Image 1 (cartoon, one colour):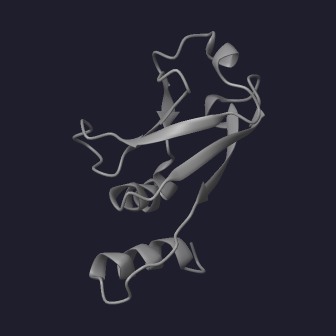
Image 2: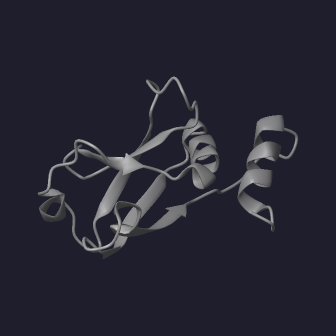
Length: 111
């Protein structure tokens, strides 16, 4: 991502938790989710293929945790940091249209 300092490698380490936030200022993609280092520096964005599902989780106030699994600074930028994602979805109301759509996004076998 443009604007990320070369020292980004010193800001995150394997095992660190990264923060995800809905980017309300993005006028092009309403599902944009930013990824931030523990100090608040925006490192990048959730790839588009995952953004809508993560956006839906965050909108429902479900905590999404990204954990740094691997750092590869010599790779191309989209592969610099490999993360694991976890979210605790305790229950979804089957009659809620949004919940039903969320389940489709998250649990679809072809996703």
